[in-house]
Structure formats: C-alpha cells, structure tokens
Image (cartoon, rainbow, N blue to C red):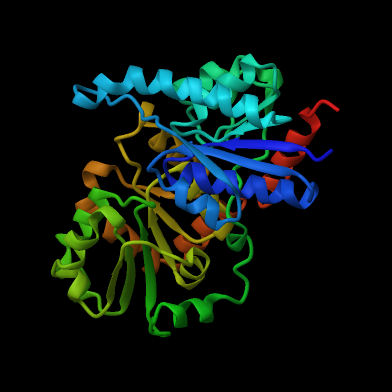
Length: 366
C-alpha cells in the first residue's frame, strides 16, 4: 500500500517553496506515494502547488491582525471552521505523516493530525519560531531547523538541523551567467544589482528605488532588476526611476536562478527562504529586514549572517539613504565582495530537502 503524505503551509513563497521542495524530495524517494497539500483559500499556494503537480485543498482561514482591525471580528469563526475542516481532511485522507512548513493553514491541520495520533514534522525556517510552531512543537515528532540555538523554542531531543529546502533550479547556477544576462536583456559589460522584495513586494525597498532616480542616472554603468511585487506593479512601474534605461521594474521574477546567476550584488529582505537561497547562490548581499513581522524575526535572521561576515545589514528606516550606496560599495570594493561571497557560501545547505524527506520517512509507522 502506498504512503499517504499530507503537507500544509503557505501564504507566502517562504512557506510554499520549501513545502514543494520537500514533496519533490519525498517523491524521488517514494515514487508511489500519494500527496495532498492543504493551504489557505485565496492565497498564492492555491495556484503555485497545482503548477508544481500536486493536489491541494483550501481552508477558510486567516491570521489575527496586530492592532485594531475589523477583520479580527471574524477570526474566531474562521478558526473554528478551519479546525473542523482540518479534522475532516485528516480523517478522510488518513495520512501516514503530516508535514507543516508554516502559514495560516498549517496550525489547524497540524493540530488535527496530532490529536489523531499521526506523526507530525515541523519545518521551521526562521531563527525565531512563531507562536503557533512553538505550541505545535510540544507534540511534534520532529522539528527540522535552519539556525542554531533553536532549543530555546523546541524540545532539544526533537530538533534536527538540515537547513532550509530551496527550489531545485537554485542549486546549480554553474554556466548560467551568460544565459541569465541574455534572458533579462542585460548589457554584458555592466555590473548588475538584483533587488528582490519577495513574492508580494516590499514597500520600503520600492520607495528607496523610487526616490533615488538621481542615483541611477549618475551610475549608468550599473544595471538593476527591481522586483517590486504584484501589489505594487502599477504604482512603481510608472515612476521616474522605472523609466530609466538601466532599470527594469518587474512584478514577479519567473526565473530566479537566471537572475541570481546574472547578478553581481543582491539586495533582499531577510525572510528565511531568501536567506537560504542566497547562501547557496553565494553572491554578496545587502539585507534589509522587514520590521513588520512577528518578533522582528527577519532582523534576527539577518544578524545570524552578519555575525559571520556573510552579509551587510541596512535597517528598514535607513534604507532610502543607505541601501543603494551599500550595494555600490560592494561593487567597487572587490575584496569586500569576495569576502562576503565566500562567507555566505559556507552557510549553504544544498541537501536540505532530501535530509528532511528522510527524517519524515523515519517517522512513518509501518
């Protein structure tokens, strides 16, 4: 009888892409296994997971908004509804294991599985665990992490350190530089900065680009591919900076591997998935952590690299003044760029997805 594997997580690429990477690794190890994903209705996983070749069902669930919000009035009802729906999904699918990568849907599904006595594996991407995962961790069978000192959040005996899984196309950029520059229409003799705001975009990074038109006018020897995010596409595609010949403003990057290969410096938020990819890519990076996340975990993610000389950190409040000059400094200082590149490369874990898949299979009771 084939194994049944249920995977839950989503909301952002930081939860979705690791989930897909784990599923792909499990499929290689167990080609006959049946897979089912559970996500949140209306979120990007409902589109991305089927494109990756997996079935998905959605829960009507949302997060609790910090501060006053009318949306919080419906939160208890959505939570109860999603818990009931999660119990039914687990009961009907009867998985051998449930894997959670975080996001709105992950909590109800993992709780339902634990209450049913099914083994659960948590894949915690960040250096600072969220409230839901800390609660789930008490009954989880295994917790796979990517940072040191996670025993402050989880039982030490359950922790495994495989790193964060990333998309398979990121794992090998060898020989893709020329292809990447051609794909994005970049001039071969000019340096390239990749500015990545995440799948939804980053307002501060976008504003720093918008108000620094003069910087790009003065540095025509530098090209930038600016990923502004789908929410901000029209707003920033029409600004003065986006009209310059050395600036490309795109809502979404469809070939991250080619962008990484083509770039000389990367400016990025400090989400866990982004950092894991950057460690494997090995390019010098300027991290601008988002302050609008639980427990300021992006700053903690970034500092874990900065302490090892593997990245430069610019605070969100200082991004407009410092972000672009920092990238320029790296481009002009070959020794600095080499040092950052070598240091961040040492932190990469290319076999994370396979390692997590093998941990999951150990937990299945047969």
